[in-house]
Image 1 (tube, rainbow, N blue to C red):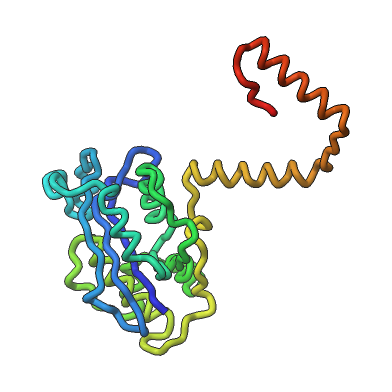
Image 2 (spheres, helix red, strand yellow):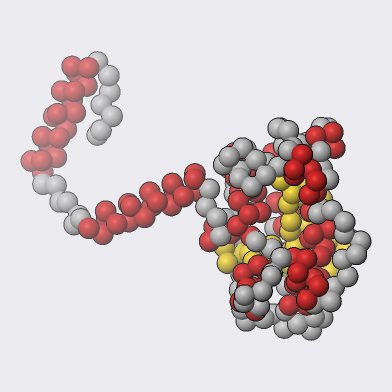
Length: 241
């Protein structure tokens, strides 16, 4: 089974509020081994300034991403990298919210059906009432993170890979029962996707509530006559036929 550990760095907390990604990093795990040669890593021009308070967290400032592409230009490469994999993300609603918003904003097919495991949810089930940040989990499972001074998408993805393997049985192939993958849309729905889904639900409800109408021959003829009358008086073809 192929897994892709994923992390992003952003300008803030809310894509709907104007925040954008500035870095995305991913690394493959297969055969219960971290495939360090199979990585995806890009800096991203967010098209807006990066607040100083955020720069102090991940070290990515305006100058560093000035000549980098916007996400829309790298989206296809990113989607190709994760195709066929199960994503593993720590606090999946956050990262997926940014990625799915950017995809929708660029008019690119979204990733709503891709399976995702949220290690934050998994950790909260395993370690209730404890700190379950990625750093806290690394310390709990004895994973060295001395080299990690600032947050970084690829660094965090690599750390996540080690934490995930430790949480789910180490190098033994024993996916934990509570590490259940769910579709990306179960973690987050951007407004456009939510609107379409709501319309589908409403249509299904209306169809179930109303019996099929049966139109007799006289009604059909009356309808056609009215359409012809509308077309004649308006000088334009009728929209309803």
